[in-house]
Length: 570
Image (tube, rainbow, N blue to C red; front, side, top):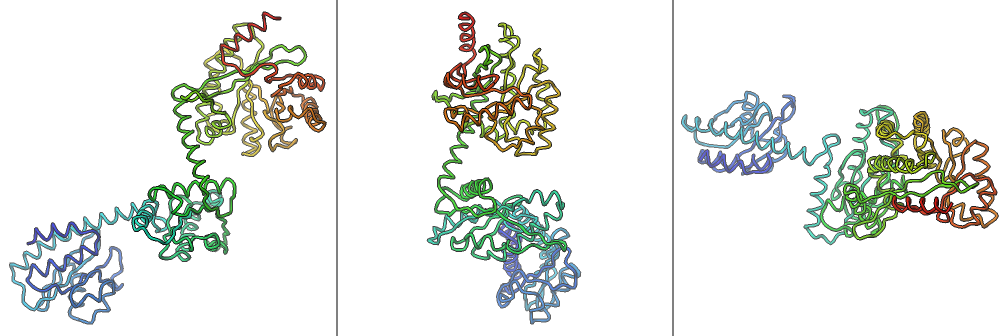
């Protein structure tokens, strides 16, 4: 009976269910009706604290989850306290109190009423049973702790991402007719708060946010923390509304005697708009939140189907891009640059191209931003530079000794900690002087860490590289910032060149040319597609041009053929 009882009790899930079964089995062992209670004192709990009843059977059922002090039977209460305080089994003519605790779990004692005395043999057998049950309880307690770690955020005590998925899945399986929504809430500028005021302050702030959200969104809502400073609210759509989500953050939080006002950005997805299980709902809400953070910071943004469609298309494109890069399906084309005074070739710009497995060309405007966002641009940029330098070596062998090679440099590459080491590594593989390599940057560099970026550009310039400001006039840099930039060249964006047929357009281009001259910079106009544009630029004093009117970007073999034919004509 002891072995069978132990096996059955091991199948119970949770300490409360286990405890309920213990009463029944002890009663069966001593041949009495199941009348009893189980009382616990958690590990570390002060002795003077009231004890809790976690299981009860028979006439004691009303005492479940109540303190032991609520029990009116004094003898029963006395036996339980004696068992717990002395950590021993107590046998009495009115019943038994068996100790089932352990050092790891805390104290637990089970009282079962009995009007007959317990024989010495039965007492010995109950001692064995108690040893088995204590081990079973330790195992169940350990599993409960594991489950708690798996489904609970240990910092704020909320359900975590795993638990939220389970809650959403259960709701989906119930097929409720009540519409539910999922909101993801992100604290604006939390990383900066953490950096300035410290992690302990940040942790206390997260706990305070957790308390506010729980107070606002109680059952049937579920509040969870799914990572970092991102919280989730899942509940009836009538509850998960913009005003309700913003309300907990209207008043400042008091942390360590200081008031901290927070703003949030949130994305809300009705469950009817998602497909699949809880994990898909969280992904869709994450897409909306990401869109909100990039375009509507500090606001609550509602789901639109096109957001998810666009995000999935970008994800698929990025997956294909990674595959294409690994399989060497990307290739370079080279567009010549010409001096306007005599139309001699002064250099080339290396441009990356991608033709997918179906033969369709993917625009760099589509895949370059993805490469930058995903970090793939770091490896891709090194590959472009290495292959562009290799091509320049071939062109120099063909007699173009003074030609330069331009390569685009993104903000992500510039800010990467390995940038300078990468340049040194790649240049060390060739005999090309860095002075013949021109790295083209854009005005978006001014939107990042300006001082750090300027310092990095100075270091690149000191290594001997030339620097060029690409697409000038389309970004956000000021003249003051431009004066600080260690650049050698200004490139006039094609959007200005194509408007030189208007008075306003001509004035803007002439202004850029004159600005370049004033700053002592070489000025190149890109996107020249008509002879008249080239003539006008020459008249204005522009130094160099590139564009379809002179030469389009060409693969290596086609470029070599173009150069050979041009040489023969001259």
